[in-house]
Image (tube, rainbow, N blue to C red):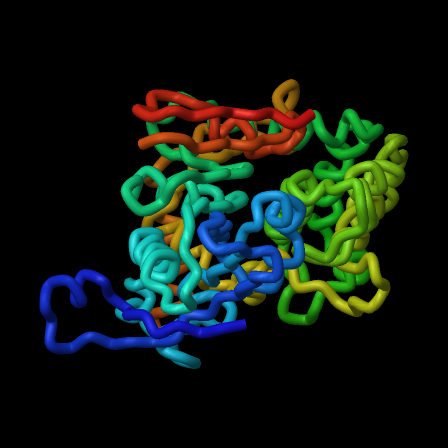
Length: 399
């Protein structure tokens, strides 16, 4: 583990500003297989702490001996221990203004090309998901410095005007669960059950106890089923992304093939609202409490900033999403998916949600080759299809 001294703003650095704030950026380095002149495998960090990616990115470790490569994992600014303003990094929007992909790419380039550890070689960027986007972008933006990129599950085209249907993500999530044995009618019955139970004080009490909701996150009104339904929907959407064939602890502790495990609770349609709600609870419990150590759950995002298991600071990705990464996503119900209809996606609606989030959280304080890897059952696979790109790309789909 190492730290290097970088700058908060590369604009200030290269425009001659007399007030340049420097800070420490964290990275991991492994040179046990490295031979002079061999490549440098460089992981462009995601929205989370560095350990998560170093432990769970097996491909780089697998092929490093074959290529005698050095392996570098660089932490993304404002995540993990790379905090430009230490404990106050998230206090104000002025500081968070330096949390963006452009500054992060400059960080990675600086480390990858200006490091003084006396290793040299072709720089090959690696990344997955958001890190995959950064790996692809750093190759595109700095082709004279970065010799190649392998971007896995990279959502490089999941933006407005991409011609990608906004409801395709949930379509693939639904297909993944149904292929694993889930009964979509059991899931749909669960959504109806949540709404029905929330209409009475007795029903809300049942849901609060069933889901072990913290006091601040309990259903208190007839509309409470909405945040609970969204909380459960997030579990379905995330579990499809981490449906690894082996036990993992990437976002949370899970068994191998967790989608298949979840579907064991969703094979039959329940006859009562209580039983239908319990089926959904079992899926949530599998995701958040597989180890059996979680006592309570916090489901309301208004009071629970980490209401979905996250890799890094709960404010980091929402900030990036709202300021530069708006990705159109919605569900349209059956036959597209087993969720409820909230399409069409609108920019205006997303802006309103982002405004509400910012007010809630900050009003009082704070050109050669690239490889794109994707899995046929991975929900984000449709967002990194090859479109009009003016360099050579090889796209591989892993079934």
